[in-house]
Amino acid sequence: MSKDQLFIGIDSGTQGTKGVVFSREEGRILAEAYTDHQLIENIGGRREQEPRWWIEACSTVIGRLLKKNNVSRDMICAIGVSGQQHGMVPLDAHGEVIRPAKLWCDTETSPQCDQITARIGSPQKVIELIGNSVAAGFTASKLLWLKQHEPQSYERLATVLLPHDYINYWLTGEKKTEFGDASGTAYFDVKTRTWSEALLNAVDDSGKLLNCVPDLIPPDAPVGTIRTEIAAQFQLKSDILVSSGGGDNMMAAIGTGNVIPGIVTTSLGTSGTIYSFSDQPVIDPKGELAAFCSSSGGWLPLVCTMNVTVSTELTRGLLGQSLAEFNQLASTGRPGSDGILVLPYFNGERTPALPNAKAVIFGLTSTNYTPANLGRASMEGATLGLRYGLDVLRQLGITPTDIRLVGGGAKSPLWRQMVADVFDCPVVCPQSSEAGAVGAALQAMWCYINQKEGDVSIGELTDRYIALDESTRALPDSSIAAQYAAVYQNYLQLNDTLKPMLQG
Image 1 (tube, rainbow, N blue to C red):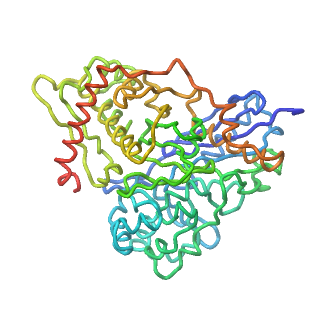
Image 2: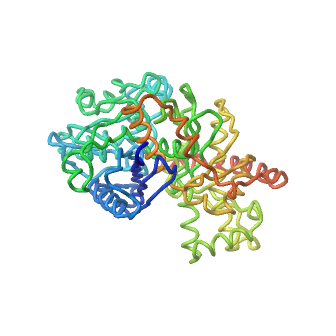
Image 3: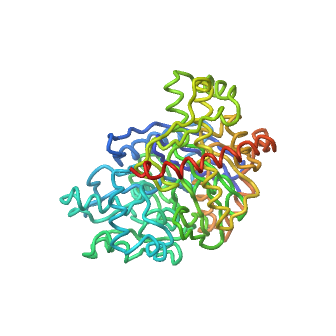
């Protein structure tokens, strides 16, 4: 190469937008930037954002990246976008946003999940049709909610996009999506990688929605090139490609090198995810596992829990402690928190499917009711929930050889060791904690090389560019793992016993 080639990766999440500039030649991040998002919420489960907030945040982040001294604007070759999954961005016939986007964590539309499922006939028939259930948080129920609660807005609906698709639309003017993010709509068949007419008609039997879904493209294809206005805004070349992008989990899979079987990525973020690459669809007849496609050409069986750092942050706030103080406090508690168990369903729960559940703190006595035990139990409860997800993967034939941790919670040595002990499996973090943004940048590189130079596999790129931070590696302690195995059985029993009450 006569000169370096640079790739921008954008990760637009619930809490904020991150961006990186990644160097092909140097194989590292040259620049990073971040800005926060607002959130619209109420006690009834509403969680929404204005899509223009994402665009404002992306503009801020890209602007900051390009002002870095070591970033040359004329070396930018392509942009990739990672976005929070499942959100509904409704556009009218002019491409204007009709109302705020309902997000993945919005549980206001839970009743509509049951209604769509009933129209198909049963949960099993839904899974047979698309490989997934109509889960709380997925896009389909949001569309039915809009139709029922805001019929005038629904009447104006001409296109429905996912959050990352909307950012791509802003960048290119093209309304397209790829298989990975489309998998989380509950109206996409993961086996055939096509929109499901049956599920769309279960939302609206007029057939309208068949004309509202965007065109599908494979993950190595570009959405298009940046609009003239975008090139002028950021003083960039006019031929910069925008890759297909994908959902945050799909991009984080690329950013952790999770593009071959055996690797499992676990995210300790606001929510928790645990997922692995597969070269064929992995469909759970119980519907607990999300049978997603990957954004790297395969499939990405995934289990999601709604409350991970939600649990620890609420407890930390209650105890009035800094993050460092909270970690120190929790580390003084013993494994099992002296019998305290937390079912951390503060935002309801997706896995197990308890969208209306409330959190439970169980096992309090006059002697174990201490700040250290409460802190540790909040961390353990979130981790036990993820262990449930790992068991779902194992039951469907996924055998983990390597657990790669990402998300804010992964920065805690205590939490990393706890995951290793609860999972009874070694864990390690990638060198870069920005898995979503790095994954988006690498997908953009993949797209660019395939378009300009010839075929390259995404695995070749992750092998070259994704490195692990061996200083973070945690190995399970066999005696503590045995203790947690017993705690986990108690956790399952408590969950099963309280399930009739938790279902709301």
